[in-house]
Image 1 (cartoon, rainbow, N blue to C red):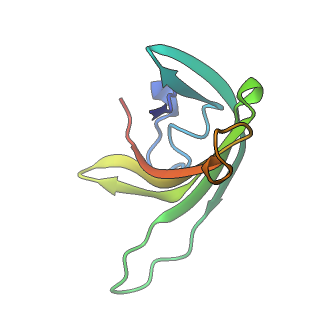
Image 2 (cartoon, helix red, strand yellow):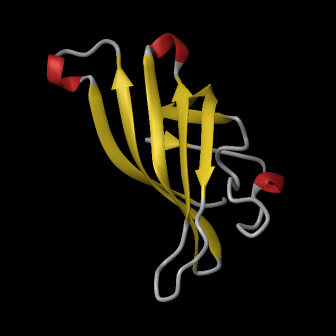
Image 3 (spheres, one colour):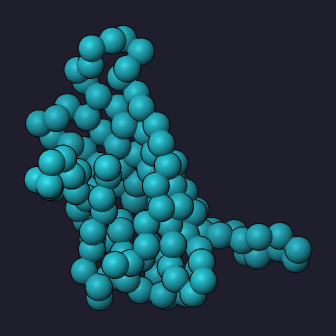
Length: 117
């Protein structure tokens, strides 16, 4: 399970700062057996186009975490929107690992949704 955390004061309104509570915090946590490991967020990218009539509009984001001694990198790409008045980041992610049992197992992918706690 990938867990991202940030102080409540970072959880800003989408209107003020689309980067919200996850990527501005500068760290992410990987939880295994209730023992979190923290690593630095090494890149954050945000883009947005003006809303177009009759189209859904969202801020688009990407970020990456370098997991150091694990020899892996996780990257997230997704959107920031308001869902039921809650700032929400919906992402697809890729985890790339240096050491795996099989050649085909170096890259895994999934999706994550982040909301303020």
